[in-house]
Image (cartoon, rainbow, N blue to C red):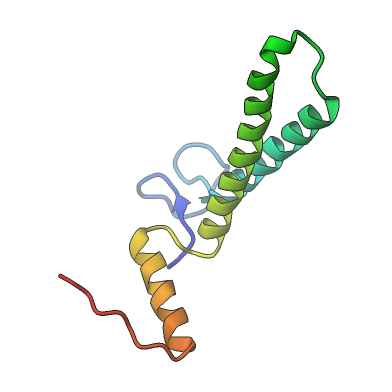
Length: 111
């Protein structure tokens, strides 16, 4: 379970940052930045309140709630990527390790 890193084929991991030979880009930082941006925009929209026609108030409430939900989802995705969990199988392995650490017997699998 290593960090997900993207690089062009044949890259050595060194270079200027563009094209062949560019350094690896770790993606979980982008997800964290997206989460912070959405959270900041959601808080600003919430604090500003509603100024406009009352018929559009439910739309603004839905938009602000969507920003908070999106921020939580982006933060969760960043945390999973930062901890090295990239696939469902990785998450199942983590769950099995937690169960073993707690002394709980492994679950029976239907395969």
